[in-house]
Image 1: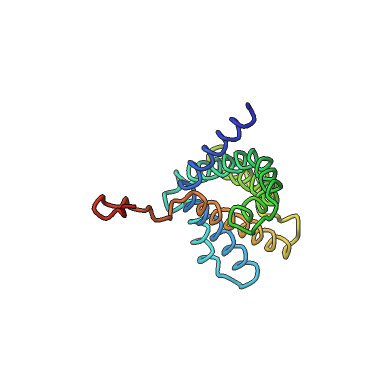
Image 2 (image 1 turned 90 degrees about the vertical axis):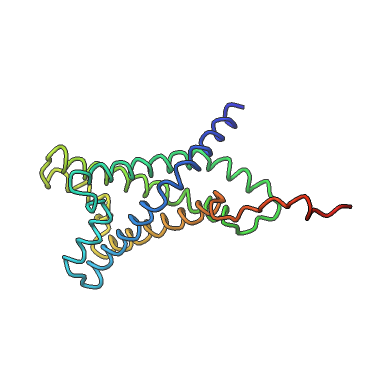
Length: 201
């Protein structure tokens, strides 16, 4: 009973956070992919790359608010990952109980979630730590360089880093769109039928 109630609380919190963070996380994923692939593969000029970075980390809100934006979006992503992870086991049990499992949006969401769980959590935590460390704690670049190395997967090498960023960003985008479609936000609500138009048996 406790596990069922806990899973229900996770689901409720997850569904409440997701719509609020949809746009910021989508922008973060798209600009992260565009910046890394553009700079690494397509020779994107640095000034254009800075525009993507400004959107990615909320610099457009003003330099003082940059760490605030990164922290809020990052902590929101951490919350989504943790509450989502709490629902994975129940989701697996639900799918195993179905004799014929169809490839639905919910199925895709629950399949991608365990795969992308650790990379997203790592990306969020290192992104927050890097921005807060640089902007608020005044840490020198050499002390926080490791955080950025982990954040963008630089340990995979120059080519692997771009692939890593692309796959993690794509995974986040997939989670966002499959997740938001399950909330029912974009479904048209059926208007009640007036009494004079109701069919009498």
